[in-house]
Image (cartoon, rainbow, N blue to C red):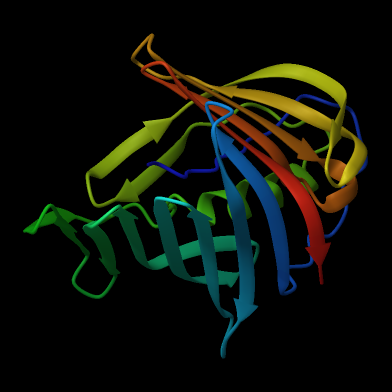
Length: 227
C-alpha cells in the first residue's frame, strides 16, 4: 500500500507571504476503493539548529505505513538528510531507506534488503515527504508561480517530478468547505494518476489527494489541523 503525498505550484497573480515553518499535526481520513478506511497523520516537529522531522503515519484494518523525513530548512531551502518508509500488510513488513551524506556526496539506499550508492551532487534533491515543504515555500514566494521540475531522491535513486495545473476549486472535505488548487502529477504509466488539492488559506497544506494505481483508488482528505 503506497501513501505518498505530493504538491506543486499554480500560476496565479497573488501577493507573496512569508512561509513560517512551524510545528503542526494534520489528521486525515482515507479510504481504498471505498472499502478499506482508516486515519492518517502528518506531524512536523522542529529539532535543534534548523533541523526538522516530518512524519506520516497511516493505519487501516489490515495495513499500516510510516514515513519519516529528517531535513534542514535554512534560507527558505530544504536540504534532505534521511528518509525512511516502512510498511506492514498483514504479516509482511518492508522497510526502505535513503541517507543523504553531503560530506561524501553520496546517497545510500536500502531497498528490498539490498544496499546501493548513488552520486549526490544536487543540493536541491528532495525526499517524498519534504518535497511538500519545499513546494509550499516556493508557492508562498512567487507572485506568478511557474511549474517547476523537482528532483526526488529515495530508496529507488533519483527521478524528476513534473506536474500540470488544473485550476482552483471549492471542495467539501471533513475539515469543511475550502478553496484549493488542483494539481495533477505526470506519470509515465497510463495506469497511474495522482491529483492533489492544496489550500492557500492553510499555507498550501495538501487537503485532498486522489491516487489511482492499476485499478485501485486511494483517497485522503483533511479532517483536522493542530498548530
